[in-house]
Image (cartoon, rainbow, N blue to C red; front, side, top):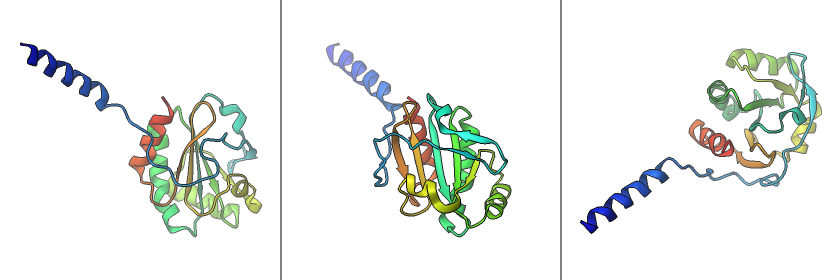
Amino acid sequence: MRAGVYAAAFAISLGGCAGDKTMPASAPSALAGKPLPTFSRRTLSGEKLDTKSLVGRVVVVKFFAEYCAPCTKTLPAAQALAAEHPGVAFIGISEDERASIAAELVTRHGLSFPVIHDAGQVLWGRFRVREMPATFVAGKDGIVRWVGDETADEATLRDAIEVAAK
């Protein structure tokens, strides 16, 4: 009888933990654990985007460029996750030489989230990006919780978003 009670308690304790996710391993970044850099820029569609207005939301900032093969492979996953998580603010930052190239990528990949052309690589420097693709996930508190590089896949980014949203 007693063994049955212990077995049931053990099974319940395992079931309660099965759904708990932990933050996936992050790529090295000087911004990990620090506030997400704030900025205010015009998107490719002409709208003003101010990250200060995103306080209280999970924010995903994705750096990419047309010349970066891994970047173009990860854009469809970013779009899928943006559609799957409408409460999460996705921001694309294009490091392409011209805004027209960035606009073509937005069209080609059907990106619905705002994209900024980072003329002069100002945001690149502010985020201390070393290589692309680079993806930053900040929690609702505005702190960078996870940084992804070219090895991060859609499932890993999904896990990072879901843990940051807790």
